Image (tube, rainbow, N blue to C red; front, side):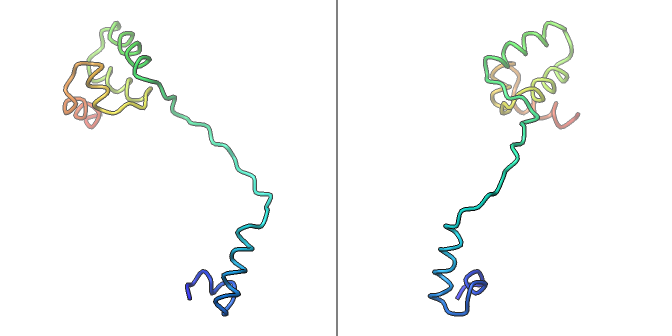
Length: 96
């Protein structure tokens, strides 16, 4: 008999029935919805952001960090948008 079923009864069959009854019982649990702190943007929005950031003529490290902070894009997606090698992007993010 499993440890879980043993919590309900020593009799295996009775434990199974009690477990099923317990799992099917209605409850009044309430859940708190957590807001996503990090805004998620798609590739099109990220491209526009990249153009805006690049227009300020800051160095690549700042551009990459800001793009990564404001999006949920992978390194490869950022590399495709910026035209910078993904290994170099990874280095920019690790150095900061």
